[in-house]
Image (cartoon, rainbow, N blue to C red; front, side):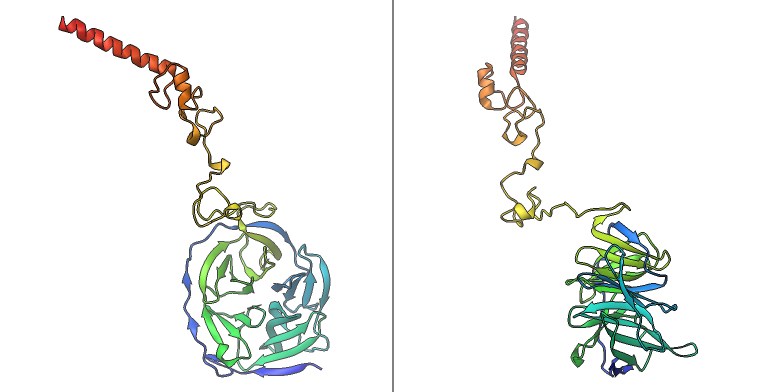
Length: 348
């Protein structure tokens, strides 16, 4: 039997509990656009919410005489679908998230002609409705995410609300946009606002902001590496790599290795990645004269005939300095002889 519960709301909170609003801050500039790895059409039009449970994508839809929730592979292949058995008032699904072997979906039910009832559902992955939460006012929830314990919902204003059963944890987070899609990657949140994607922390600090090659992002999911974005206007699901910039061709995993101290040695190979190493990487060495000896070890980095000081001595040079070969030394000696000859003639 489905258990039915009721959540009261007030202008400032849930269950009459006041909500604190944390102001948004952090960088606002747009970062390089993420690369489109692939794209595919959702199972049917009017896809809204999307989530990833570690194995599959789950996509929610608006009501249009068909199933509401589809389980997909990350390539778009349909695994299963279901509606809500025995439910006379089919809801529109706006957002969906997978938590602890269940799905949580937010949406609206039609209860009277042109009258909507905002709802939150807890559903099994086989399509059985476990719990139905009503509200006493219009939540207007659009996106939903979770951190394994708590639910986070976005609504039609610049806040994200935290929903838990603990009264002291009902609060709001100030965010830079009205997010229609929301997800959590284990560390940060990702939100969609039309043609922008925001990455932000649990206190609302913006870490990254992207544009993407579509206009109306209404759902977002993260699989630990890639983002999946539902675009309403194009009726497509885009798979994006936020670590690779730009382009529309398929991209593999990024091969760029971080080098925190800039010493030319990747952090994974550097004994102290925060301190520049005295050891030199072969990738950063320069050989100006092409003699096979790096400039840093070459006594005459501009003379391919000289690599060490002994090379000058063996050639009869007195070691004038790096970059001077035997012909240069001879020219210098001739110049000095001409000077003294001219001086002698003048004196006479």
